[in-house]
Length: 164
Figure 1: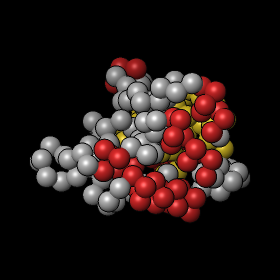
Figure 2: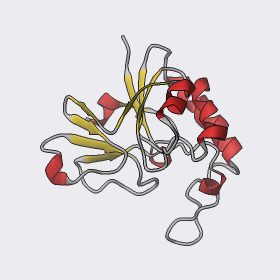
Figure 3: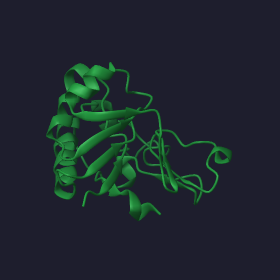
């Protein structure tokens, strides 16, 4: 049986992600890796270590910064990939589809969940859990939110059901 995974903010090929620092002015946002090449290779390895070919993966935005150069990484990722667009996903829809995303959404509803790139306003959630990215290393706002930016989930997709 296919499983459903979520992940956000891979920023494949984005070298500055490995130079940015946190609010303390010292700690890097992605201290685990020396460069985007090292981080990209490890994120692909971790993704493929847990996702099976028949699984579905929702990438909640900010796949890469330069679609022409870095979107090709998606072809190396296992699973049926779906994209919930993020603020940095500015390529043409045809480019994302050609790279291996089967469906593209602005947001996605599931039983008890709403998947989005940015956290949604609490009044729009009802009793649903908002699974989102965008905040990178920052914790979610409240119990009703789950931040699945790669920095919060050990650079590895997580099972949607585990977030309930």
